[in-house]
Image (cartoon, rainbow, N blue to C red):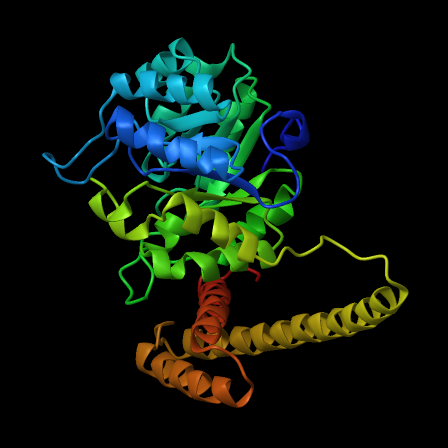
Length: 365
């Protein structure tokens, strides 16, 4: 079971100003001092208060641009001194942390590849243990909620209380328009468990193309997330990394102004009465779903008994394939997405197999 987190509210970090969304913007990579300063000046002039830039870039293939390293930290310090912006970058090791602290970096984030590695997370947590620096943690590359939570717990146990997360989507082999699958359900579950945790979306890495940034940012706002981290470059098409997903500073700020920000709640009497009636209906429907699932598992136990008595294996894949295809066809009739129905019925099937297995092994389900 996840442990409670001891957090300092983001309103006390001194980083962000109202109105929402809280915004972090800057280039994917710090490439040259001129590029960093030109981008930072333009963003500052547009009202952005927190500047990001990658100094060390984890790349899949050797020989790709892997960041300028420590010299880039000097440029970030110059951004801070000249514009007054807070500056942040990604860290992936103890060495990165120490270098950032040396150059007065205001905030760091942990990338998706690093957050998936408990050894590196512990190393980073130990290096940050005596600091007051805010840390944001991106979701692991794979949709593993416990791994994400474990990364947060390691940092929090090291005394880091200015802690938040960045949702950047998940690697996938499926054919989708985006670079990474949004996987909003994982973000929703984390938000449900830790409602006080500052929550940013990274539409740049989620979309992989600037044409998707507005829709993904709006989805994040519709879910009630506090902020966005968006990649912005003074000359995006000439960027040395992730050129397609970066916006000019003006386009970045235009996007932020175009977002419709949802309130977390409303005191309007009509809204309150209406929403409570609808929630009461949902409660009844949910209880009926549980009753139906219980009845289904009761039938699964009987099927398990028949299979046991007639020495038949539990898994009947051809039968399940037929059932699943039938459910996917019926899904359209009820206005349900095929993917949702597939996920739900695969979970039901998994539980049904577990129940039957207990019957065959002589246990009590």
